[in-house]
Image (tube, rainbow, N blue to C red):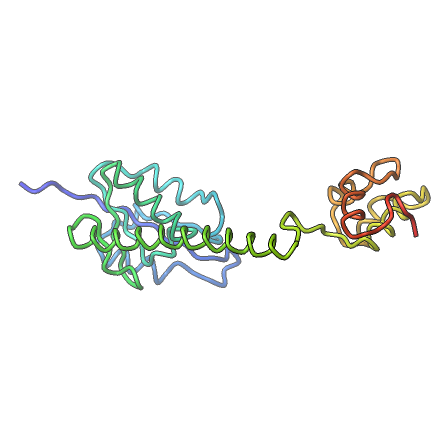
Length: 217
């Protein structure tokens, strides 16, 4: 007697304001044989690290189950994240079935579906290596031109001098200063100390740009 396979569904829309609905995905999962009571959902961006619906769905899955989704982009934040997630499911003895879109041929409960996902996994690794290679090449080229490859300062030397003067004015509140400059409190204090003194980061930035150390306008 064949082992009964339990299917668990997951749907996601990007907005929680009601402008997007789950109906299309929900109906497709039910048509594929998923019990409506076993469909989990999220209404938030797929780039979020934590999604309550997905977390609950992954927790509910048991060995022998199959996770059914409408499209690949409903599940993963990126191709790499998708590959890692499916790898974890496979290690737990859980399959993945995609109903439509570019990944419609993926069904890791079948040999052909596993082959198709293997191609996606290879593409993810290829994409990662390309990004690393391009980044290294870009840094090497910039260094060859004598350019600084570190973190770009958020404020220009002129802005640093103006911020220095404003932060040193006891008549002004910090909250008013940061609103005026359009920066956060943390950024302001990264450049200027609580007593109005230039911090080392600001001094290095001014020096790197050929400005005088500690100079006020």
